[in-house]
Image (cartoon, rainbow, N blue to C red):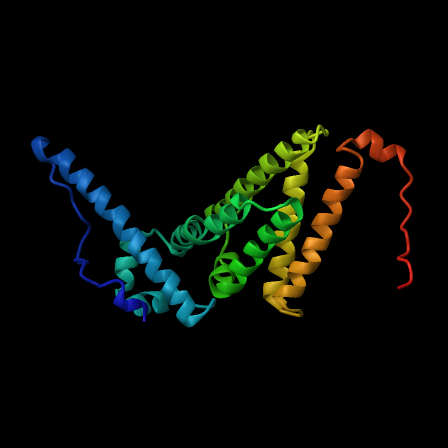
Length: 244
């Protein structure tokens, strides 16, 4: 259980008051800040384990119980549930989601395989921790939503760099790299959110459909060398597939 990771050994009968003596104040404040940062990380890790154990509907009382601390301890380090949710989302993005996306993008793959691998990394990361993802999204407001938006921005800008570099290597117009990247990331995130909430198809099918959509867009961009003018000058019939 999560409570093995964190022990309720704080004194909770009053706020921590730093020694105000000039010669000790700065050192004590610094040590308290360092302790608070480390303790918050422990409690966030305990919260993630608690959500995995009890599901997305878990409340503060259950989180405290699962971790093995009193709720007073949680409120000593987090102002409210929103603060804890924000810290949990940041931890999830920094230690789980982002590293897997970065790993997929950094692999030496051809363009199609890279597209498929990156989409797979995102979908499978969400699928492997559905309770964490749904907990954060269900409680996401204010600062928590800002964390979600920031994670999407980081991934989109990374994708924009990769896409822009590739287009320039092929001497194509890379001016649309940023909106294309945001469109791809936003579409995949929204589709995955729908899927994790409904599970009306397998993860493999979702990945295949998203890869088809994304790769179709990329090949369409490449076909006109990234030029909006060339794209607008061409006819765009919806061609029926040939009979097998």
